[in-house]
Length: 270
Image 1 (tube, rainbow, N blue to C red):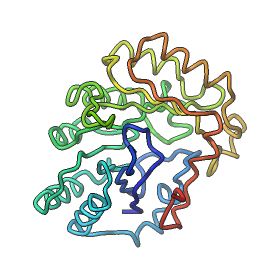
Image 2 (cartoon, helix red, strand yellow):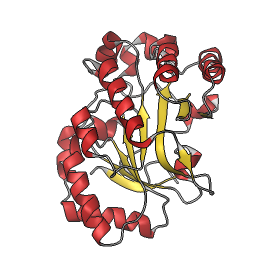
Image 3 (tube, rainbow, N blue to C red):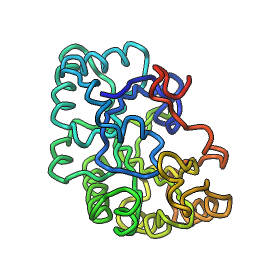
């Protein structure tokens, strides 16, 4: 486990007023050249010092609940599912009642996801690319398109559209994130049209303008800048035209607001 905190920078239906109880897992199963979390996602040597026992992980979940967080938000959990499930069961025995958010890049196996049925309340899932060659070039993810789309369909089968409680907080369902990249690299139109045709329009759709050329992005000229107004508004307009019921948007200046420092106990500064 790389870090944990009450995170106030997620979508409003996730962070609410008291924060999302976020647990970050190290050594992501993708290798994005522009990853803003590169300190923990792509530094396996350092992450060797962050191993925790099942009971410790359960304790962090309970601590976040005691802090008043609205949910337990498991970030990059795909490669630790067995350990997470064990920790959840241990925490439930000691009083954990918060909904669980599975915060994933969607590069998940269907077998693993099926084991999470009736365990996960909310799937907070990326749809990163619509072309496998670009997914491999920039994230080292072979077969990403088929894998992620199959994963999203399974998540939707399990939980359905995004359901909010009377406080406006997500308690069940699927919320898809799409990070708009420069030069159309993310294939935004293709991915959003696929979602419209293959999932219910009752999913949450979070369109993210926060791309910042982090980590090794400077080595790729096409990725070495933030997105511009035209690129983002074009994607937002398309989503509205396609009739999604719950769209979450960001300001264009968001690329300067979500740059964590995982050497701090408060990675996002609040």
